[in-house]
Length: 207
Image (cartoon, rainbow, N blue to C red; front, side, top):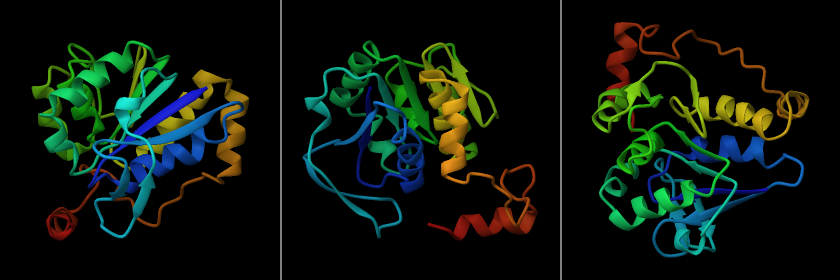
């Protein structure tokens, strides 16, 4: 099972690493990162993670799962005709095409979400709707061969859903147990609706 995650400068690290942690444990699966642009060093949106990516996205002609992460780097890619064409061509070969966070904007820019319900990071909801998708404020949205996840940490939930679809629920549950993914956050501030005015103001200062 070939699972491909394209990486680009300014990608959101957990968008890619969370699903990689989950899907990398699927029996018979190989997860590979491919660079959007030249092969070599790719830097995350925080700036401290630099990954050496040995292959370019254009070298991939088909895969079983295509998973597109988000991050600040999605904005310039939304106008990259060659990359969007590759998304369309690769999607035609997949069992599932997925996105995390603002990765959905790239699926939308490629025309893959036209008329579909989909989700993304709450701050990008209007942008997603502008690409012809129906924004749905759910953590994971599964429509046919397309699975979208909301912001950042939701990629883990989405990957577990994919794991069950690709194998079975028992396997997905076993991967969840291996990761000890039993979230009990110290604060109930994980969505815009739950966040206080002070928290909503403070987020504007974060990079």
